[in-house]
Amino acid sequence: MSESTRPALAGFQPERVEDPTLINLQDYEFLAAERLTPGALAYYTGGANDERTVADNRAAFGRRRIVPRVLRDVSHVDPSVEILGRRWPWPIWIAPTAFHKLAHPDGEVATARAAAARGITMVLSTSASTDLAEVAAVGGPRWFQVYLLADPGARLAHVERAVAAGYEALVLTVDLPRVGRRERDIRVGFTVPPEVSVPNIAAAAGLPLADGLNVAFADHMTWDDVTWLAGFGLPVIVKGILHPDDARLAIEHGASAVVVSNHGGRQLDAAIASLDALPAVVEAVDRRVAVLMDGGVRRGTDALIALALGATAVGIGRPVLWGLAVNGEAGVGHVLDLLTAELELAMALAGAPSLTDLGAEYVI
Ligand code: FNR
Ligand code: LAC
Image (tube, rainbow, N blue to C red):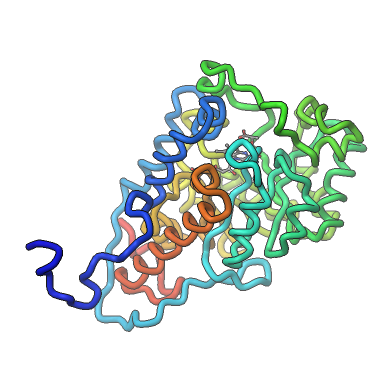
């Protein structure tokens, strides 16, 4: 049947979209790969060593199937969720990623604008290429991701700057005691170009902008550092948990939430996929705190699977960078809109009008 003779049955007409080559997150990935410099592409895409964990983060979703329920009223779907005392419109957040200016000159400000317009929480990286106050000025819900700087004075100043700028929570990333070996970066000889800097690290260390990239991170983090960070009075979220006992320890040391994450497969290669690690962490946490996850979420159905398995919300890292590379703020916004629309549809088709309806019985 040709396009013109197809009956105008509501809901069966294909959506009219501005650009039919950009209708899902993978389309953004393909186009971004054409737009980015080889160095930026390697850095953004890459994982550690054989990239087994990068691949498995995606494959873990492919190993699950949804068992939907029917004949439930899904005329209204409510995808909102409460996290740390705030109602999020979607159970989706922007995971911290370094150097947004590698993708687009507007960098983190563009990302923050797209997130703020949708009420979506953005986690700003310690290695952001934009000053944290400039990102804060955009407004919108924001958390700050902390890498502990090696120098104690700089470490303190770094966290104090984020607190002073009104970030609502501190996300301590614990899976980077050293940087994993990213072989793509080595092969293309990736170096951060001179126009991209890490102003927040430089400011904390009291150094000129250009010297920020030489500042060392702490190489001996322990659980005491979680307690130390909790002393600033903001909720602390420990990111990079894969073992259930570490989730218990995080709570014991004052964490208000944990993130099940393997850093997008960029640290320990052959580490367990985030989705595979999730159920045991959810069980260990036993509803005491929120359990966020990230790694490989590219579809609304991925989000639904993780949420059904007990995640409170899911984060996306690379897709935001693809959106930024393709079309700046609008690109990030479209990536977020595509993912949230897919999740809303998946909830309706799975027979789960709210997130509280979802449970592990939805997934095999
Ligand atoms: C990251 N990630 C990361 N995490 C963090 O805590 N601080 C950081 O500065 C960065 N930087 C960073 C850069 C790039 C280019 C990537 C791809 C990732 C990890 C990130 O927060 C998240 O855990 C993963 O990206 C999630 O996996 P997906 O969505 O990219 O598959
Ligand atoms: C990375 C660091 C910056 O994954 O977290 O590249």
